[in-house]
Image (cartoon, rainbow, N blue to C red; front, side, top):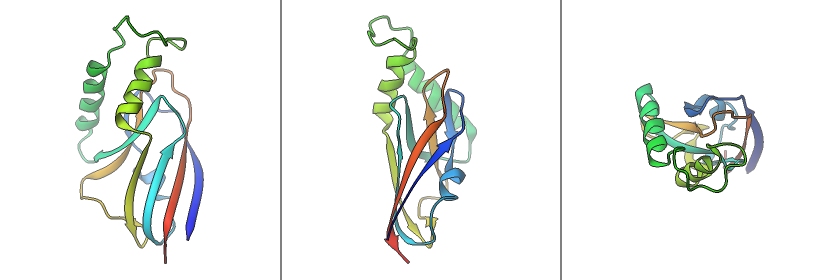
Length: 136
């Protein structure tokens, strides 16, 4: 069985946000693999710590220091100083995540969840394309 669906996330502020429940609410009750793909180049997805919110703050701090908007050598700034930096952060983190499911439930570690990594200060709604491959 192959299941595919596009969902739209609401606007999130710049930062790292848990969206696990929004994804899991769309997954059929099967055994298999889930792949979630974000259809944008200035936001990304990752799986990481889901319990302590300071982890998400630390991620944002680290990436803003690693790829600083204060750098003057970026040429691609048509949409502002976070334009090229958002693309770089997105490439570093990636545009998709995948994980196994059993009876529609993720088979990840106790403290894992899916993050939307929003790299824009003036973000828009984000589209996710979910693919599930498996069997009952």
